[in-house]
Length: 294
Image (cartoon, rainbow, N blue to C red; front, side, top):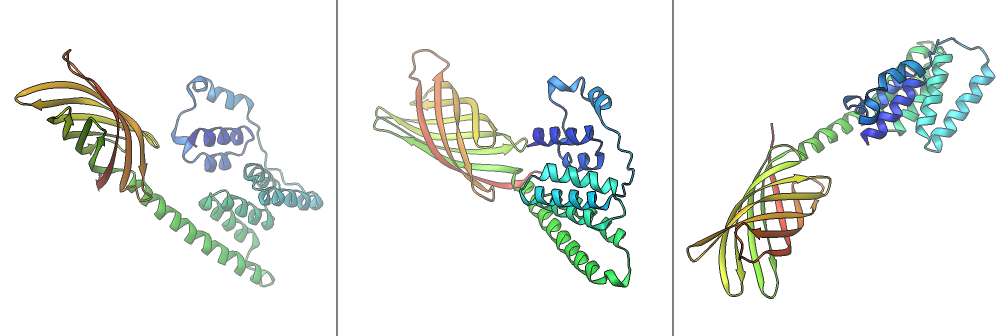
């Protein structure tokens, strides 16, 4: 949720934790504040943010207590609170490696594997190369390798997901069936963006013993699940043509790879010329997506 990320990031900015704010708001930073806040966001940040001096404290009992508290927060999945506390600790005790390790774990559990790697690298830097810390160093280096592998797998999955979400073309087949009305329809479409596409439509309908060929054009806008489409269609019957407005709306349920969907739409159409019957019904069909936008 970009809006949730944005506000979490802004809270950390106000606390003076700019690096953590940047990591939290990695995606949100590309978006603007809400309209009601945008005019004053920068002013409010400058006015209310805290200034961290990075002054090192020397009370080791305080350090141990705070690290324990931060670890408990991580264990309870209070990741934002845990990360804020670890940020405070690492600023106050920059020469202690253990807080960086705990911070890395909290970041990893929050799904921020790249930032988790940074904190672990800092722990290794502070730990140094002394022989007595060799075993600890080996453990941390192995953990770093695991994080790097996890990050690479996550980036690969993200790239594949983005590829799924930007098909270039689609084919649809579906129809409606009732005691007095039936139709079979097909569509060929091109995506103009990852959420909008235009189609050429063709089909056959049967109503009160009369068969009709239909042709049309439509434009569709897709949300997470719901789709809204509007367009024009022409019905050709015995040399007579009638032009209709048409509207479609309903859920389009994607498969896991985003290569196909089941579409259950409420379809309505009404003639531009008066004197012709309007129709409203539910259609069920299957869309197949192929090609990729450049």
